Length: 248
Image 1 (cartoon, rainbow, N blue to C red):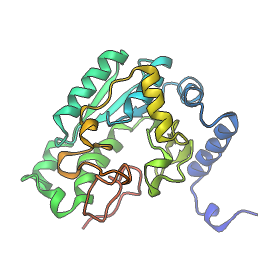
Image 2: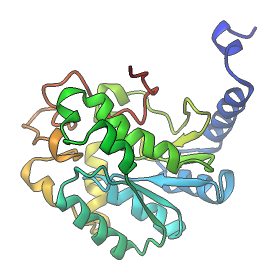
Image 3: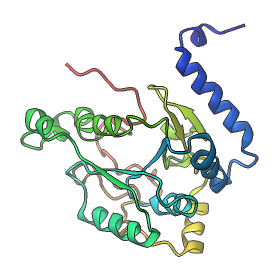
């Protein structure tokens, strides 16, 4: 019997969900991130998949794993115009070290910044709208033409990510691949050491999750790793993994 919720899905979404289920069955070990990436990059979505990276504190591991399979994988980097200089320097360092050949730096549309955030203070008045303007909308445009994209989300990062799967259907029907979904903090740290990967320079100062300068703070001992993001706001995600809200 088909559930009521399933009957409301579009044919494209139902196909995407079936594909995700099929891909899940092909992965013998959910911890084998390299196998997940290989299936995604060379079989399921060959030529129609991108890796979206913030070049944050945990990004180097996924980027290196992908580079080991295909250094020409398109890597989409969202430059909001409010990033830390250290993040931009770290990006350049990793691109050079890993030999990545297709880095796509995506920025917000200048005309929309001038219209909606000319003074650069939208983050203070409406953080969700600021994220939509500077991240979600540019990313949606950048992903046009791709069937799938790779993310670095992990279940341990926050309660909002506690049930992240290896393969998920996004609201637009694209498939999100989360190779490190089941990895722990300790496993990622151990792999960083084993691979001799450089750390984001701000990590040494307590920034365990790094976004824009306006909405990122250090994390205290024992806090959620993303507790420094949008501190003091009723917000835990930038929005690229949530349905796009309607703004007046």
